[in-house]
Amino acid sequence: MNFKTVDSYNFSGKRALVRVDFNVPLDKKTFAVADDTRIRGALPTIKKILSDGGAVVLMSHLGRPLKKLKEDGTVDFEKHTLKHVVKPLAVLLGVEVKFATDCVGDEAFALSSSLKAGEVLLLENLRFYKEEEKGDAGFSEKLAKHGDVYVNDAFGTAHRAHASTTIVANYFTAENKMFGYLMADEVSNANKVLNSTEKPFTAILGGAKVSDKILLIENLLNKADNILIGGGMAYTFFKAMGGKTGNSLVEDDKLELALQLIEKAQEKNVNLLLPVDSVVADKFDADANSSIADSNAIPDGWMGLDIAAKAVYDFTQVILSSKIILWNGPMGVFEMEKFQNGTKEIAKAIAAATDSGAFSLVGGGDSVAAVNKFQLADKVSYVSTGGGAMLEYFEGKELPGIKAIAG
View 1 (spheres, rainbow, N blue to C red):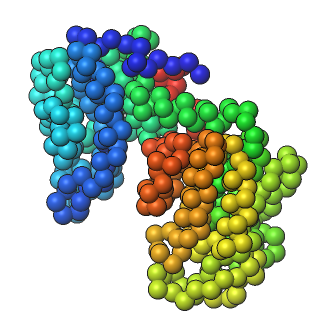
View 2: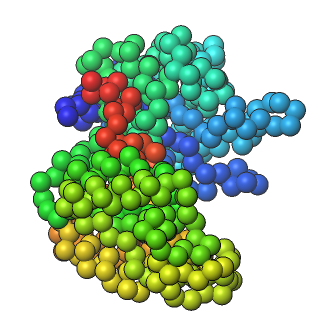
View 3: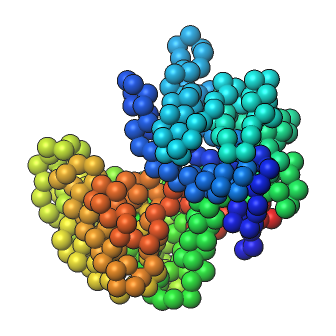
């Protein structure tokens, strides 16, 4: 895939309209930014434009204000305004950041049209307008007036055909629209996994439901040598094969599908590995009584909440022999200390394999949270910022935000 990036463009004298992903968590009481990872992710692109002698107009969403109205039917402004991002962004950039209290109002256009080289303007939350998520052409055309050049650096929203992520690109010529560094990194690292000829390629999939990962598993069956399945989704497979799963999370309407996936894996000679044993609990609680059981023989009244020692050993052996590793989804309820060991040990195995020369990509909110929690984010090759977007990319779908620029 060929795509233009900010690296090959000189922004001198230009206003760059940059779609960033500043959908950051805020403290519930003070509304201070609780995690600035996404802001930091945008800095290289912004700094490149400024160092060229360009001006930057930033646009983003924050939450879904129109989906979560207050009781009186109005928008919860304080919870969704991007003004909370201005100060932390200014501190990280080391330059003043101007703020427009609207994204397409007269004030916003006055501010963006008068921007000088080296100046930065942040527009108010795009999702205060329903036209943003609808991909409205008129709204997109208005946004386009903020810049001479369009830069998409928001991989996390690349799977949405929204006004600011996709449609706005129609109002810029091919040479004046491109990816930012973050977006380019995401795409090239995802392609490195999907198109690699190095073997073995191991995909580690976890999380609660098989239904969330059906398309991903089906696409990976054509590419991976090993697919390791942990988390709640494993118990649907065990029940489908006639196992006893107690009170474990099972999607009864997906039992037939689970059997089909096992069959397809056998046909394609893919090693589909399930956890032989589980840490089980008598209730879904951090202080629950826990024990170890075979994953296909969980006693009545008990539920699997993590993979246990034998499964950790089996999975680790496969991971350590791999050259390409994709991890999406935790092995258990890692938020609870009692049930975090499986996820932690798999994260450590991926780090060890990476240290031995494997290429590893971790993506999906929970997997990213896990490598951060266990302080292993810098021990894997790449940590993706885009949960849903990454999932859809690995499912083999064409992402509208990427197509709008790469064609």
